[in-house]
Image 1 (cartoon, helix red, strand yellow):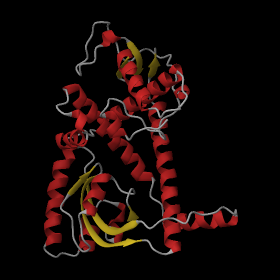
Image 2: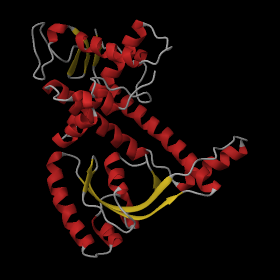
Image 3: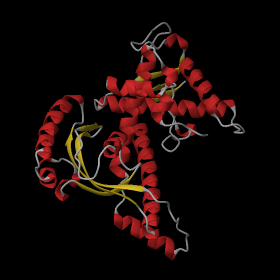
Length: 328
């Protein structure tokens, strides 16, 4: 099945991720006591009517039969022509995805990860069909943004690929007679950054104040590498905030968008990501031109994708292991 990115899919009410989601058969039917006590006439604070009937309980959240039916219908409309999938199989897959999404959102909220109004409006602006969305649609968009932030945190922490890993993979492929991709020219960026972490909204205000003071020093001519060593809370601090060369798709979207606006030598205004507040200095831009560089780029991207896929799988495995799931 061809699936959409989390934010865009959730704007339609359902978030699907092809790599991270276990198949439906891996979702267990719990024999524990039900975690959420409900009555047939109860309405939740978010407007979900439990009188619709309960399809599943994922920890402290209810998935109703109406929600499941609507999600199945939306999924059915996105299936490419010619794809053969039975109603029961599709229902199981969609229910598994809804459970996964619910667990991720709950994990994000426990960490006090939030979606601010500007982020919600950006999703609405990018989807013309969402003009004047209802309060429930806005909640769904906010939940999807939270889920994407949780996923991105898991991916970014585990998907970086070192030069040594690239070299090792190329050598192993050569020894095993595996043909390596030629690769295509890719725009690459060499940058440094300074990060002040903000794991929750309470820390965000202080982090923003700190990064703006550092930004003022950088704009006044202070050595960026020295500032990074002194203030940055990222692992790159000891190397002056140096991130080396990276291509599009390797950093979280707000970070990449800020880099795209810079010319070599410029420092970005403060940028917020799910990791905290950054300022970024772009040192150089290049299109990887030699056959060796293109090949290393292709191998690096492949390894990064594999790590990202595994990070998402591990995230869901951890959430499932500690979750109470009751499929009705």
